[in-house]
Image (cartoon, rainbow, N blue to C red; front, side, top):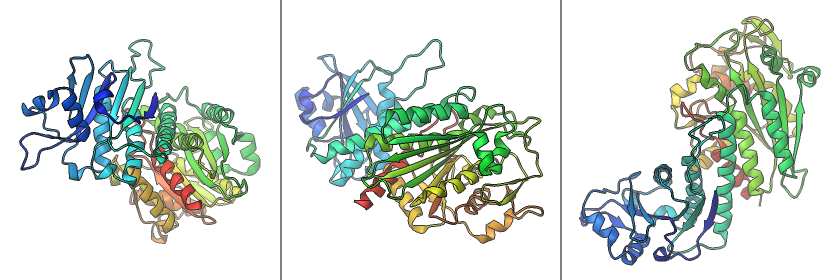
Length: 500
């Protein structure tokens, strides 16, 4: 879809196939919902059409409520309810825009003009985030993957979205639009990958996608480690997972060189890419096992973030490592009680083969140290315990560095991809004690998200590191969400600004 900023800023002449204006709930002094300046100008040009309809009292203008009004000229006016004007924040704006996007799906609108609501969220620096979030919210709400349908492949006809503001835009706002487009592009890649079935999106498919990214962007280099390479290096923990499948595991490494100084320490992103997780010998229950195609969402999110970074041309260096494998039961699969040796040399007792994510990640986290990264962030659908703790709205962050954890939280707050920090200390590490090896790969039922992070922490002592458990946020039960692409993209934007 084509996105642009409107320099006209006159809603009376900017209707196109459709136009969206904000409406706010009435206060104690008003009998009808309140129009912003854009709505008032449009109402005047339409001879009071909007105000006449509002006076009927049917549309209450609550947040996420929408109303489509056909015009005599054959266009549409879409009223976007935003709740109380002085309470409109970025989270509410995001929900309201998505509501409009969902409504647009059922129309034949091809070209849409969207007027940013006049409220605190769109003043000064808030306008920049409003632009980014509006683009992302529209892209998110209009998303669909129909590649595997033989019929009913209809997609929304909307092809152009023009963002407008009654007080105009300045030169920097085009850059904000470009950021929004970049993040939306990265989210789409992440969603497409995670939504694809496990018989398509294999470790090999992830590797092919990475190679394609390298071909698309001149400053991205790609290297794929095969199982034979990993065996020579001593990645026994990773191989203990991939050996149970007929699909060969891959360690995929991408380097993005965007900084002027190519020797600048990179930010490292590590993603869990278990393209299907049966649980291995510790077999999962059959119910909802189809959802285990989403267990590579960490890797999908890192590829999406890399694409967003390349689209935005961020002036930083980035290294992305994807631990891609299938976890399947077979005569070759690891058994509960097996002991394996990681790349670091740490021995691990595999007490549960369904705790495989940490087994592939620990070797990836050890490997990435060779790039001498400034910080390392991994993302993984690692524990069901995270869903119990935080539900499906906020991802967990655990870190060995307070500054990094805070920076991720700040980025998440501003882009509506929130994090919540959980504790991680030696008291929890004790749960990983093994009678026969250096570590057990599980720590019992208590504090499962924390003990999983403690396990990874044993392989991240040489650098600043944060772990994102996205088990509850990577998909909504039916569809991939594209998270944590917004969170990590905003973090990288902020990181680049801190270096300037």
